[in-house]
Amino acid sequence: MSRGTEELRCEAGADGTGARPFGADTGSPLAAPPMHCPDIVCDPGNQVLGEEHAYQAAWERFRFLEHKLRRVRETRPLQSLLVTSPIPAEGKTVVAINLAITLARNSPGVLLVDGDLRRPGIQRTLALPALPGVAECLEAGADLASAIRLVTPFGFYYLPCGTSRANPLDLLQRPATSALLRRLRGFEWAVVDSPPIEPFADAQCLARHVDGVLLVVRAGVSKRSDLRDALAALDREVTIGLVFNACDNHRHDRYYGRYRTSAKPSPADEGRI
Image (cartoon, rainbow, N blue to C red; front, side, top):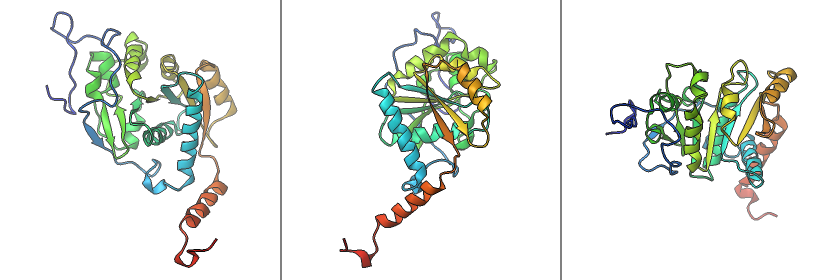
């Protein structure tokens, strides 16, 4: 059967007559990078890192975040990473996308998972078409490998959220969620974007199945009480850090601007020490 963008294969039940839920018996972790994975072209907005940002401070901040994550990885397992926030509108989806872009520059096996079954932000931010994904795998037993796409031009893999007829929390509480995330262990990194901590319990449910949680807080939006409540809702052992988003770093931007300018000397300066 052809693996198109409109439908996914369903795994037949024991009697061969119907789909079965995506359970623990569906196989070993997927190989990464997947073979014969169809690609999909995105149209990112200006919040997403691109080559034009190569010398800007934004790249350096995410490279620094990557460095910190790799340091954590030296002391504990860290393959799957949930990105969430205390409340909506704190920029967690853009952080998740930019982190995946940054990791993919050095790692060929990076997967970005849209785990927000309520309001899928990755699809909207990257201007991607609506595709089957997590929801169909959990609810209808769709083939996981068929749902994964390679995102051009960034080089990371993408598992869409899909469309569910069930309540998102009910769906995520199924044992199939743990089984699905275990099958993603074949990737070097799996970055999962989730709903905010409040007002839903989806992020807390997903946090039980990942190695670490990054909590995104936005300058001028997050309150101390929101952050305190979010930290209390998460397991302290799995929360590995905070990302302070949209903070004022103009002095750093000016530094990188001067660095970029001075990195390419003019012809008049050639040969000078």
